[in-house]
Image (cartoon, rainbow, N blue to C red; front, top):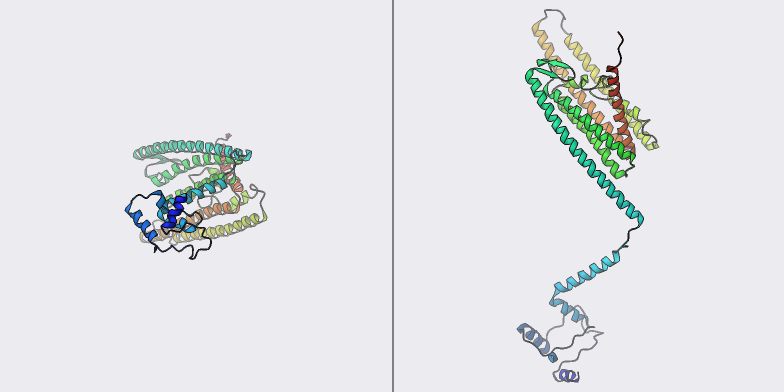
Length: 385
């Protein structure tokens, strides 16, 4: 140790001291003007080895030495800082190793919900596959029936007097829709009875709402080709046809039926539903008045000439052309009525809570199910001679 001190004094190098008050700012690099510093830099570049006695001791308390040492390999310094920060943050956010009973119960509920969701998905895929096979079989039967000139759909119809292909496909799609609707209602009923959380129950309710939207899409396709098929309601049961309005249910009557099924309601919900019912009734009255005016206009057009035989063929063809143009507006009335039904269901979903909306869709499904059951009972009733 004395040898090192003597060598430092003899070589002109000042021993390292505690630099408490530096003459320059700490962020300024020292200028390499000394010969010793230059010799150190040159020797480091040449790669020659030094004796231990030639290397000056490091001043650990001098922040300049930290800057100089960090300048040699910044990547390592950044890596060390990152490791230090990650270690510190992980130690700060480290929670208890043993979960509390509430967390364990929640995890078990999530696992059970995921298991049931997988089972429902599997059943849904199987149902879709069976529906696809059944639809393929029905299409093949339809093609064979059309080739033979006979088609059964809503009643026995023969040859060219049968239903158009689009209307027949609609009847088959409606039958498939009813089966799928029944399955969705069963799942929704089970979800309500299991008291699932709001976010899980919302998925079932939205699936039902999307299923009603699918029905609106099916009707929009057939209304282009055979609007009378929708208006006549031959795709419905006889009891349902008694309550039909422009190819479907009357929204205001549906709201009136639901008011007693989704209680209790808040004051704000009651005001929203009453406002919806009033606006729906006004729209229904406007459409009904338009349809009545169309009926009167058609009647006047057809009877504008003398209804005697034989009639003037030129006048007859002119009357039929005018009546055809007026009759094309019937398609617009049916579309507006379907849009009103679509808006009513979506507005109800917005006003009600998730559980109230679930009970609402279950009540609608049960209502139409009872109408179909009433038709079956009426057909199979005992008749007296």
